[in-house]
Length: 204
Image (cartoon, rainbow, N blue to C red; front, side):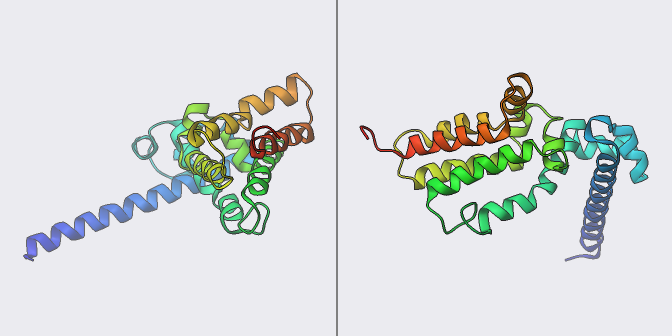
């Protein structure tokens, strides 16, 4: 490798390192502001100022406000992902698939009703489509689809997972809780009932 190539590689590595540091600073600033003021009150300008960076850097890195919140959401979902992929049963491995899926939906619905849950606070600020297509949203869907398959269920596991998770969306759950007065325990019981019915062989 020539000296010119070495210099070019060093420039690329430095640029990537700067980009990674800027991303971390922006997410840290966003998380701090969200914790202090609530996700609904945080603007892109305030995040950039808190991070000591220009708005242009923020928009280049995340695209728009929803992109920033989704990136922060993916960061905050790591603990929950660890719980349902490697934690104790029935949410984690070691329980039958039907019990794991029942526990998974109940956990999602319980988080929606928890004001202090940062993931729920962030999720409410983005559209259903953006949330479902985010890293955490795709991971949720893949987990539900896999458990439906492991249950031995016939049918389109991909679409069934989408249908089930729509019930746990912020839009649906908030409407049922706030407009119809359905408590979270009723939503969780309905989820479990749905999963048990799916698990029953036809004719039983």
